[in-house]
Length: 251
Image 1 (spheres, rainbow, N blue to C red):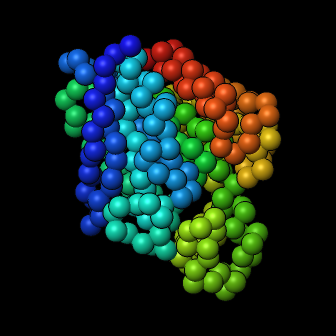
Image 2 (tube, one colour; image 1 turned 30 degrees about the horizontal axis):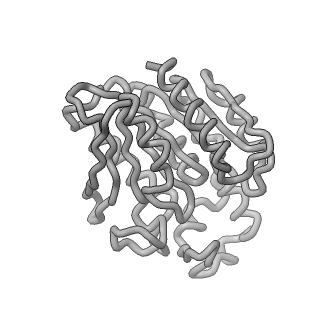
Image 3 (cartoon, helix red, strand yellow; image 1 turned 135 degrees about the vertical axis):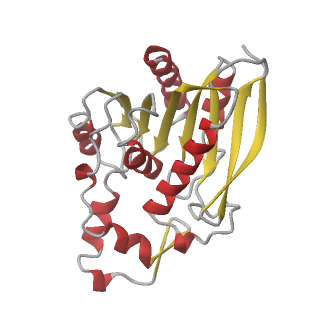
């Protein structure tokens, strides 16, 4: 295995600052990279095991916390100011940042998104076939707009704040996706896509990933028997191995 260097990074954009972790092999060279985007109220450390696994095998990784996307975010942006579209801005800024790093192979930039981060990744990447070599979606939450539009059928039903799973979201989050048709905004991305989803997921129905598998021109769906929304250690190990295989095949 390669010896690796793990360092903290800051990326400034739109008057806010993204906090991230960069993983790289210690020896000099030009390396591919995977950009990891976490789910709702996640954190830059969520994919630490997988990022280290890749770096030890000659693939850089960058994992970051969405501004306002977590109660552990260090950007100073309020969680009530976060929307899917501020998170898209964050991912765009991260992609721009990695394209400027000398040690990276600019022809092999991959994006990985889990849950809400998977939806944000798909929306961000759809017009970037020339820049993103491959996309990986882990139980991607394409259900978010549908779920909240059902809970708040009318704009007037939306409160100023909603607390979900220990984090508060503001009215802008819900207004911005009210009636939003996710599948009308994805599917143009022409490079390889890997989707991984547990068949016991109580948060995101498998039907969404099955529809994703019918939406992109080059897509592979891997079903994880017995896994839910957030994998066990065994599921994480399999996910990491499948990701590494996908990266090897796509380069």
